[in-house]
Image 1 (tube, rainbow, N blue to C red):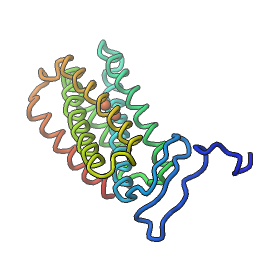
Image 2 (image 1 turned 90 degrees about the vertical axis):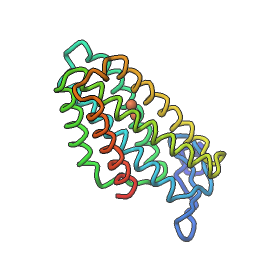
Image 3 (image 1 turned 180 degrees about the vertical axis):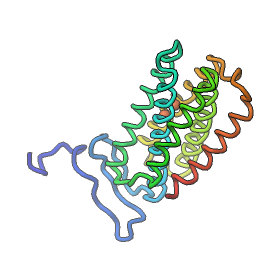
Image 4 (image 1 turned 120 degrees about the horizontal axis):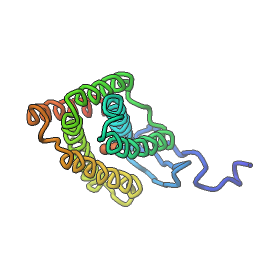
Length: 210
Ligand SMILES: [Fe+2]
Ligand SMILES: [Fe+2]
């Protein structure tokens, strides 16, 4: 098919401005169109969210490695399946916006799996405590991004906002599932949750910048 005959949503991003700080982008695979977006802000948002969803996938992989054959296995698998969709969407957005992943991906691969498996070794309650801690942090992080985008020009970020809001709601569902499955009965729940959430803050800070 000739370039000029391609459906508009399949054409590649274009119109980079002279200094690269502001950019006009046409999403190629997602069908989204944004003009004059703030390149730096969107880079940061997509990079950190991609890293977060990747980390979440590794956590659930670690939990499944330990608890996959137990009665809680299907509950974890269902949440993991949603995380796979989240990661797929951010993979698409990275390509569409030409955002590079964080250099810390290999690190999050190992740390995420270790966190998931390590907390699952404490039992079902430990895994669920991890889920509650991480999902609460991610939902809070998504809320901050929603606020940031709303304060800028919400109409320009409408599609991205829709994605983030949908995922925020699903992370909150995961958080509630964790509570429903006895997260608070995990050994040293309060300490465990605080430590994991401190780690999430560091992970978010680093993934936005590196
Ligand atoms: Fe997610
Ligand atoms: Fe989640």
